[in-house]
Length: 410
Image (tube, rainbow, N blue to C red; front, top):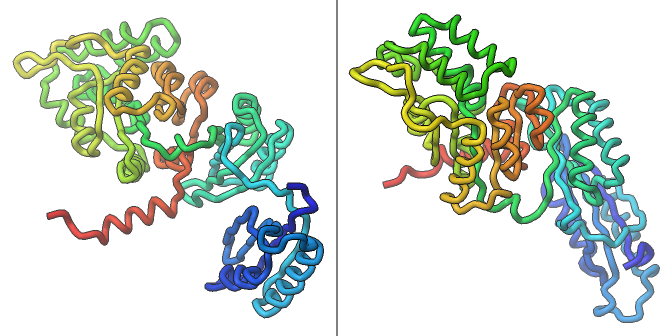
């Protein structure tokens, strides 16, 4: 289908019920087909675009030019009646089909400024890709928009957009389109400084009176002087003798990251499987599983004898590689392909897990993690992960409203 065989119609004006129906009814008397159609409402203004073709099966040998002239004349009259504006052009005859070369580009910022979004769209153009559609996903707690992009290479576009996003101070995620985006998913999150605020071992250390010593070991590990397992065992050894009742107190002190409950609640309603994997302790993660209704969890276990911590651990340590292996195990148990898994974490200990997952999200992470993850989120709201997955704020709120009004189970 060439450009001369189609007609592009664009209609704009104040939105109100029945506009689309009236316009399509006007077209119904002509031998035309709808090749492509898009409608959005922005701040009460409707924008409707349609690419029309001539149906030669209904009117064989008919002059396309004459049909399109009659369509324009009829739509002009209808537009006047509706107090709308109508414009015409040549369609490209292309239906926006989802294919291997189609990508979703999600942009998040607080606030999202025109200059930043302009720089991102320019970057898309320089990569040889075309933006077919832009949709707002949320206006709070951050503003996020999703662009449907065609003709771009995912790896190249991701790399170039990552650099531009850093310059503009926004977060950008690039994901391939396809049916898998709406399939069954598994999301696995780190715990300390991701699902919850702060570090559990620091809270325990405060009760044990060794907070400064634990902090010093943590700093050594961050400088690369200790690997994770050595660092963990040294810090846990400082807790020796702590009454086990302190664990219950720490559970009461834990604060979830803002948006954590919203994210978990929303994804569960959408059929996601949700797991957590932590370099922390099962005595804490078990409580989080119960509180949030999570499906999977794995963590290290503090050894307790006669009601007190021994300063040791039970079983092998879940380290950086162990987190990746755990994600693979969760995926196998859930029956979810790895390409349909999402991992979220903030530290170098999460890198293997982020790289194994179909989508790795660095959440308020250290620079080395942001650089190696598929995408990063640098705002303190965990529910922004939903926007990266294409879930809108309106869908989240609608699901909450539905849950409030549906009858209780018998």
